[in-house]
Length: 49
Image 1 (cartoon, helix red, strand yellow):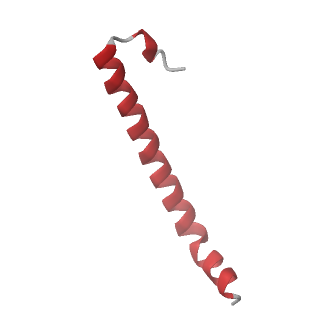
Image 2: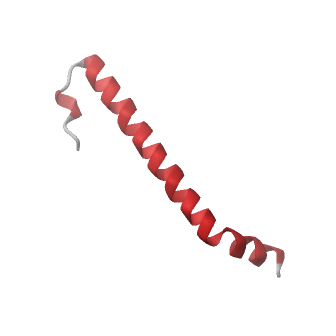
Image 3: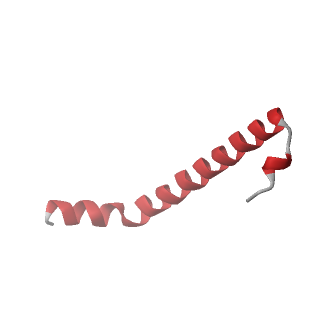
């Protein structure tokens, strides 16, 4: 998908760790934004308020 299979062993490992770290950061920011936008609404909905 990213062409990392053409890299050598150590470089491939570093690239894979970097991709996973970048994905984690994007998900952290994305879920944080969703929580910021809809968190109070969902909590109120669950409490029945």
